[in-house]
Amino acid sequence: MSKTRRELILGAFAQAEGDPTILRRAIGMEQGMALAYEAIAGRVGAAALLERHARAHAESLTESLKRLGGKPAPAPRGAGQVRASAAFALGVELTAVAAYHDALGKLRNPALLHTVASIMASHGQHLVILRGALGREPLPTAFETGRIA
Amino acid sequence: MTRRDLFRLAGTVALLAGCGGGEGGARRSASAPAPDVGVLNRALDLENTAIAAYAAGTDLMRGEVLRLGRRLLAQEREHAAALRRAIKRLGGIPHEPKSAAEYARSFPRLRDQHDALRFAVDLESMAVRLYEESLPKLTSPELRRASAAILTNEAEHISALLGAQGGPQAPAAFVTGLA
Image (cartoon, rainbow over all chains, first blue to last red; front, side, top):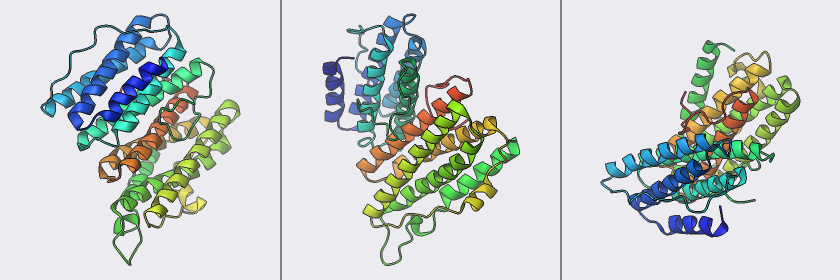
């Protein structure tokens, strides 16, 4: 993932206020991730698993948004620029962790805090898989915030 | 390690998580404790339990698994240190760990590396669950973020431990700490 793309996503989360807005950002991010992983499926070992999880996250967050009376934004149509590498996927997952780390300081609905935390933790597990695939230390820090080392 | 052992452990940890030492775990009598102190002390109790468990479990580990166990132990110590600092900043008193013997009495019998890994996965899962349940109770956004960073690291530990057992490292799309 390019630095600019990461900055755009994290900037959008930083500016988001209120549970429905944060949820819409998260849904869009997960849908974009699913499309990116779909585009590299078969070329990066973990892509199929990551795509499946991203779709499950997007569906769950969409249900949460509907329960709050919100309406999801139209789903993205294309994956944008993707690279078929574990390093690209690692960048995507780090961005997701960083976005949820920010969101968990702002979300108010208790059930939503549970859901988002369980999704952030899922992305943390993806980091372990991808770091391992890249031959990197799988547990480089005791505090996983999605920051790029 | 038997299923009965696991139930006994779960009961012990639930007790630790629920009985953080009175007054919300803050042990302050002069004034009411900050509400977050009790929540953080419950997390500290579990981190102290995990530290004791890894200290015992690494005796049974070898090679790459031992290296992993030592890394996880070091990271649990970092979590505990961060929690102690946060509790003190709020004017609370961090809970002290129990003695190694007291912890050992509450742990299941660990016979080999396989038992140690399974026990570690169970403890890490309990930690994920405790931190997730803590998030709505924390009033400070920064403490919620700090807890989320620890929670995610505990989920990473589960992944690494599952990998060390040859299993899938991300078996579910939602990591809740529930079996």
